Image (cartoon, rainbow, N blue to C red; front, side, top):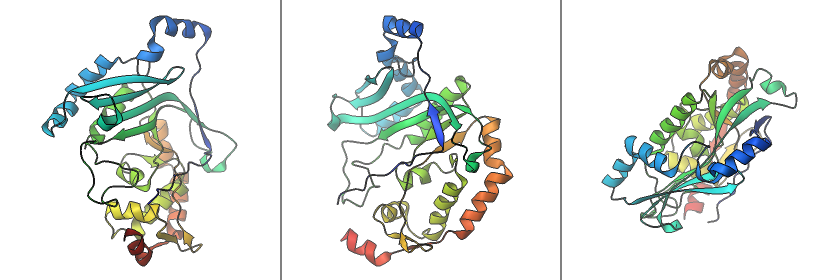
Length: 284
């Protein structure tokens, strides 16, 4: 079955990545940091030490995965992607892929919805994938939507490292764009959607199809088997800005009466049902 491509709507939040002036440009070209340093700070060897110290590599070794190769590849000017392989540099041996960007996030366009949202310096998780390429799923619906292989079980440790970097740099928070419903579910305890209506919609779906497992829940959303009772149409998951607030100003936004009131109003009006028969037909 072909997976639906998830949509990311035009957000009322804008992420501005700082531009380099001429002196910065010359300096980066001279030191080659634009192509060899992740976030302008970390070499592949630095990252190897961090991943060893965090216990990530030792845990993977216990699973029979070893001989780690770390690559920092440039995507465009001063934008890199981190890739970790086992034994060989090709897709069949790819364990993890991570793309991060540091910048500023602020409201624009005069949206009343986020009138109280403060400008903030953040780290944006543009892309993160972790997999065990040496294992496969027994059936297409055994894994989560978008997964080609089972995960590595290291997401919590990686997030802790990301948070540690943010605290080191005095950043206000971490931004994530959950491509699938289960991505938002897995990070729900520490991340919140900046849009209270989106946060309410997410939790209303969770409330109304809570009898399903996470895998069933995510596939039900992904295959249009969750119905919005207000419209009678299939519920469509749209990715949007999800934030882990670290600074007091961001935390206050999510704790504000305005955010809580708008969340509650939307949460109480949302109602969803699960089309069990359609889901059965799709799975067979």
